Image (cartoon, rainbow, N blue to C red; front, side, top):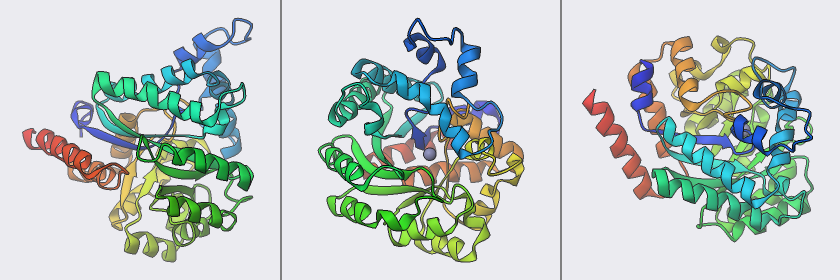
Length: 337
Ligand SMILES: [Zn+2]
């Protein structure tokens, strides 16, 4: 598939972190005048992985500056608005934006104010560009149960009003799924959709447990699934989609070459695959670029690519009438070609 056609396809983005997708030019403008970072090149060294890092931990260091500038309502609102604007540029018609409200309370904002600021910015973008969105609230594995529970109840106030789901992110080895049963039981009881970062590094057990213990309806990354027959069967039998993020997995050293990524095998084994960036800025990529890389490395056919977009529509956490509109939009463009 040529780039032009790829751009013309109406796309859906399910796994995108707001703090990992701040425009570098915006960050540079928001940094204080006394910052030692004076230009985009210097900034990119700090906030983006231009090739690989040593580990997931090193990758996560790249979020320090974006989180630092996302401590006021105005900045958060602007950054959410610009993410919607960026969606419009590459013809993304629906996005699920994820973030951890408690990361943005370091200078006095409440979690409610943070969520409201993201909603305000994204709604302004939606009004201007027609890009639909929903929000996913992230829990961090290293935070206390009490803090995560508190965030859950704040998110509940916005459930059905822009927030649709919760997510769990962070170090899977130190904090495996078992410790989060109570939190996710409560999230399910309250009516949230659930997606969980699991099997991003080598641990396929975390994928199994996220599905069987934590009610995960989608799995973030899931790269480790290939090394377990049982996990592959579970994903297939329960039709649990993977939110695949190829460049991010390369950045963190989980795969040494893009061609080693299991995405092709997932597709061939009829696992539900969706294509995502994880972080537009930290991974120095776009959704279109992720599709391009997959096409170049694995020679996927047009229908296989269109099918992954359909997967993203079908497994999005939005209302059915939005899914129908997204499907119609995709059919209109693909029929024309
Ligand atoms: Zn992620």
